[in-house]
Image 1 (spheres, rainbow, N blue to C red):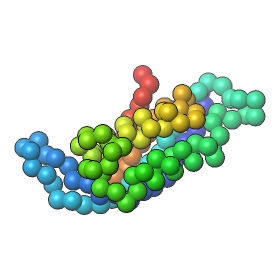
Image 2: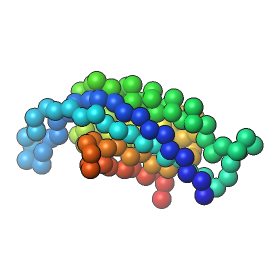
Image 3: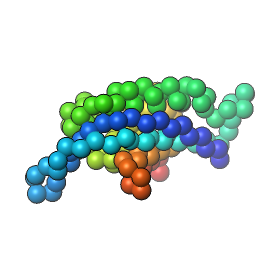
Length: 122
C-alpha cells in the first residue's frame, strides 16, 4: 500500500457553540491541513497521485476557508466549526477533486498538539 500526503495552511476565525447553547469567544487559528491518499498500485509514471494536482486541490479548498469566519463559511454547511467538522468539509470537497477516489483522510491541526482527522473509508 502506498501513501502520499500534501499539506497547506490557512488562517480563519471561529467560535464553537457549547453544549449549554452559549458560544465561546471568537478567536482565530493558523490551521494546518494534511490530505493523505492511499492505494495499492502506481500509475504508468510511478505515481499514486500527482503532487502538483493534489496540492492544487488542497490549496483551492484552503483558499475558500482562508481569512473567513468559519461559523458563516458555506463550506461547513452550517455545522459547528470544530476541527472535526473542518476536516470533514475539506475531505468532502477533496473527494470530488481529481484523485479523490484515493483520498484516505484529512487531518486538521487547529493549534500545536490539537488535531482532528477524518477518514472517509473504512
